[in-house]
Image (cartoon, rainbow, N blue to C red; front, side, top):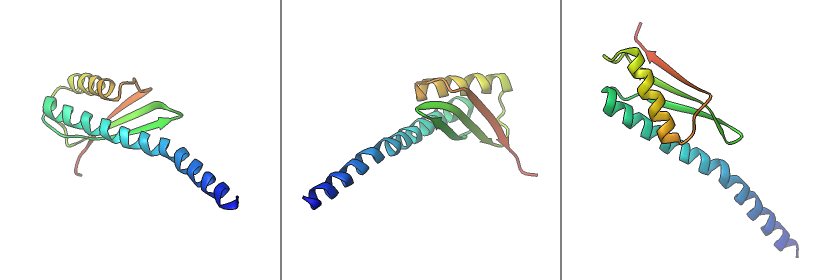
Length: 102
């Protein structure tokens, strides 16, 4: 009887833990797809990070290494479109950054 309850408890913990891991795995796939889409359309592959809170996409960070040779409004438009398309959800904010060497 004791072994059964321990097994049931272990199974419950494993099933409860699957949700966050699945969400993280799915989020990583979305961020890689956004990165690939922006590399194709802008010519520079960015790093794409994201934050979820209670199942809601709160923010997506798109960081380019250097400044692409594309107008800023076009970068913003393409980044927003790629994020909404790939994540299937509109985040509260999209942060676009440029990492430059000093």
